[in-house]
Length: 137
Image (cartoon, rainbow, N blue to C red; front, side, top):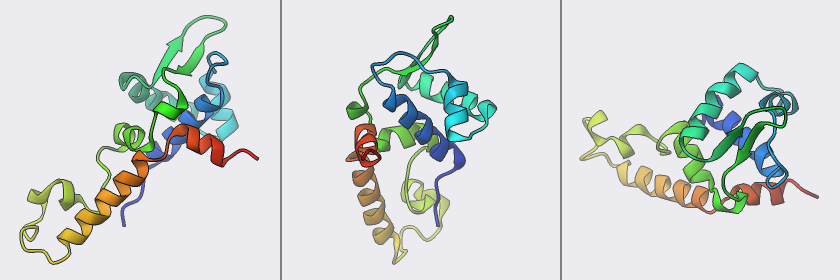
């Protein structure tokens, strides 16, 4: 069974923390790592991917740190996980049919394609704002 890697899980938690502080100025990565009980070294690797994808901005100096470039409502889980994980599908042959010799005549291939589309549609419909809303109250 396909599972998200630590990069996907930790990156989502990092972005959640930045979403919590959206509009309040930058947050230090060490504060996020401490709050989430994650390795600062690993977070530094993830932050590079998020900066390259234009999800976050960094500010230097005594009041520096990281902040979201867009509102949490504008960032959905599909685009975030695509940056952190690559394509999301239940089996590799859905995105790469050449990996499997049976993909042309596999009886389950259509099922995996349908499942993949549903997973991606669900992730498209969940934003960072939704995560915030789910975790308050």
